[in-house]
Image 1: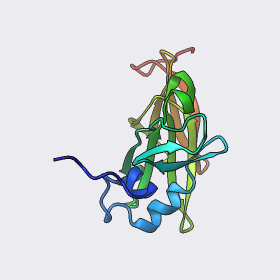
Image 2: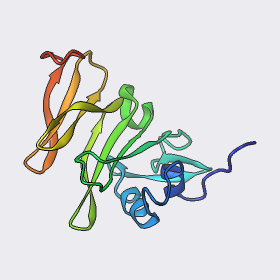
Image 3: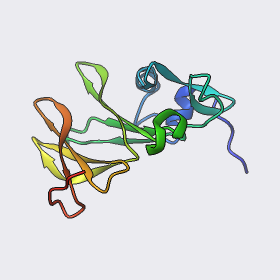
Length: 162
C-alpha cells in the first residue's frame, strides 16, 4: 500500500515524528526557519524542495530526529536535508534547533553530508559529529550556550587535518 503524499511542509518534514514528540506549533515554527541561503523549503508536488527556480523539482529528502542532547527531558531537533543543487557536491545541509525562552532557534545551519550524536559530552550536552567530503570528522561541542565547531578528528578521536 502506497503512502499518501504529504499535504503541508510540516507533514513533509516531520511526517515520521509523533505529535507527542513534536507538537504541530513546534513543527511550524521550525519549518519556517529552515532555509538554504535566501530560499526557504517548500512543499511542491508532494515533496520537500528548496523554493528556488533552479532547484525546483529536486527533492531534499529530509531526515528529522527528535533528540534529548542534554538529558533535561526537553527535545532538540536535528534536520538533515538537501541535494546537489541546494548544497553542492556535499549534497546535504544540517540544522539543529534548540528551544530557549519558549522559542525554537537554529544553533547549527551548515553544509554537511551526515550528522551523528557523538559518545562524548561537553558541558552536559552531547557532542556532534558532522561529516562532509573530507576524511576528517568535524567535532561540534556546546560551550558558552551555543554549539560550535571545536576541531577535526579521525574516527578514533585523534586530531585530523582536513
